[in-house]
Length: 206
Image 1 (cartoon, rainbow, N blue to C red):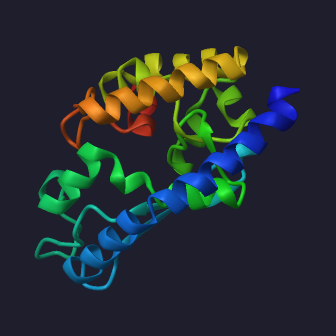
Image 2 (spheres, rainbow, N blue to C red):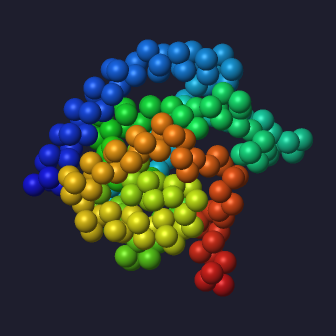
């Protein structure tokens, strides 16, 4: 009953309430990024959701679009801005994903939506992560966040889906709040030392 009805109802109520409560902060961040990112305050990227249906995830833009002399984007760690670093460490860059929840693409709690190009590289068991809506936070994020390797991260996603319950979601939500307040286990892109998932699986399968 929780998975089929109450989870979505709770998601909708909490995300609408959260969005309204954070509206003043959202407006300030939006305006700052509007000027500092040359009119591009938001980052949109296609991600697979429930049943692998692709949607655009919304986040505040934390990196510039700087390119090298050949027109190729510079590495992530060179493009992240000072304000972007602040947004990531405080998780304020995730606020726009409340809109994703309201329109039904995401949940508050669930496996994080990853890149579309990763889809062919999941095992059959790992693909279970796409039988539920992806979340802003999840079991993997409160169990080490970016410092988990891919196998352990995906194993946590499997564990989450197989044990989905109100109690588990509540515990994850509380742990997420504590982690955000203490900035625990926060790693910026390039600091976690993780290889892209598709590249990793390609190298393993050679």
